[in-house]
Amino acid sequence: MTTPELSVPAALSGKRILLTGATGFLAKVVLENLIRTVPDLGGVVLLIRAGDGGDARERFRRQVAGSSIFDALRAERGAWLERFFDDRIECVTGELTAPQFGLGPERFQDLAARTGLVINAAASVNFREPLDQALAINTLGLRQLTALARAAGAPLVQVSTCYVNGYRQGDMLEEVAHPAGRTPIPRGADGHYEVEALVKRLERRIDSVRARVRDPRKLEQALTALGIREANRHGWNDTYTFTKWMGEQLALRGMQGRALSIVRPSIIESTLRAPAPGWLEGVKVADAVILAYARGRTSFFPARPGGIIDVIPADLVANAILLAASEALHAPIGHRIYQCCSGSSNPILVGDLIRLLQSESKRNWRQYDKLFHREPRHDFRVVGNIRFRLAMAGVALGALAWSGVRRLAGQPGETPAMEKLRTTRLLAITFAFYAQPRCRFHNGRLLALARRFGLRERELYPVDAGSIDWEDYLCRVHMAGLNRYALKRREARAAQPDPEAGAQAVLAQPDAVR
Image (cartoon, rainbow, N blue to C red; front, side):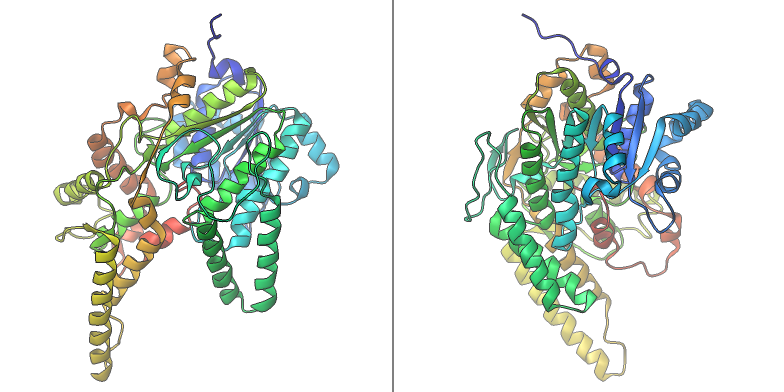
């Protein structure tokens, strides 16, 4: 018996899709893909929290509809696109972390009755966010989403991250990720981990910190430190990946007996082809280091040159989400996990990625007028952890000594060397884990799913990173996209850019690493 061929437009035709995270990078790519490739889509419901500037519709108009991701569609079918926005985009002002999204029972049930598919692309991807905020969005929000999906009788596609695998090493397969910490977590009969007791313990610790620390700035710092400690204790590098793992467990538990697909991207960067090569919004993981290097604010970084750094273009991730959604609407009820990654089919080493980006920067820096203010003359070096710590200690001693001399001479104590030291330290604390990989992500199940779609659809919705020419993508597509879409012209005119701009910018992004 042959497996029936699947089709994204056929599966999604007439469907009303609830999409979260629409103001973020990845969800915009998903939304544009839906509008462009599924002409008979029933509609999209966007759950957007109210901001300072107004309700969900106003935020949609300002932060989503006006995005450059729709430039191609706007140029080809501008009037049609505006009608789609008006007629088939419904904006619901709601809070993902509140019971029933803060809508109340009646409106919540009405929303469920009109929903045929739920795609959760919302996430807080600040790696060092206060634990209470990361827990609310990345973990507890799944309680409301699974409740909605169950009430709607609809599949849930949960966008997670390959890095829920935490500190584990070796081959990472498309299966429930096991904790790498020493503290045991009980496991349910169907394979998920029972995290409710862990969540309650974390909430008690959060309450304890709040009762003890009153100053808002110190409270944020204390909750950030708590998140990192708890993540490390249970086997994760940062609060983001720890809370996303717990979110997976709540999704698996909440969707027992229902259709659930978990899509795990690796490090998401600019689009490969669609809707335009290199489309990007904001500064992502690798870009923070590129930006700091371009500004002359760092020259070395702790990394493992021989490790596989898993980078995946955003459009391949959006395609994987739509393939998984199409399958979930037609396949037997069950739970499926797919990893959208490059490490198993087209690996690139950390050292090669750095070499390619540095060569392009030195060779064609004038083409990237928003990124480079002047010609980069120094090399960017990667070193092991021990050498990095020794180098940082030496630079710190020298910088402090020179700062002391300047103060004695009546000059400002702050020096470029100290700014450089701060930036390098912040980058290392935040991103060094991702530059020292000791695992390889596999996506065999995702590639097998893609083969169930026809040739034309596999060309329209590619998910296999095997076709990526890394030199072309990194040195031309991505660098050009970073310069064109992610950076603003005024930054190029700034005489003294923020020395920590790269790291701080990416910490504030909603979709860096999923």
